[in-house]
Length: 101
Image (cartoon, rainbow, N blue to C red; front, side, top):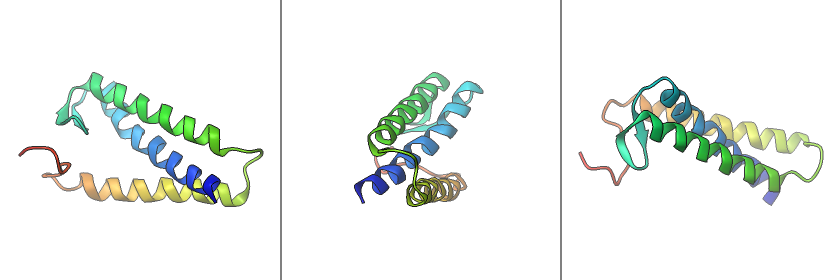
């Protein structure tokens, strides 16, 4: 069961890193935990940190060839974070709770 949670959480970090990395390498500002509009370099670094965390979690979760349940847990995590982020970013006033107006 812990292995399945690891696949789920790894996918969340890996897929959360995508928009930060892409926006950063495209030279655009994007929200990070540090500010509502973080510089592109901050986003590239934050995206890479997310990729690294996801990779480490995945590394410790894999015990052999991927089983169907592990693939399902991974893709469930990917779907959950992707749908959540699409809803979150569609709000022009989106902000994290600790960001000031």
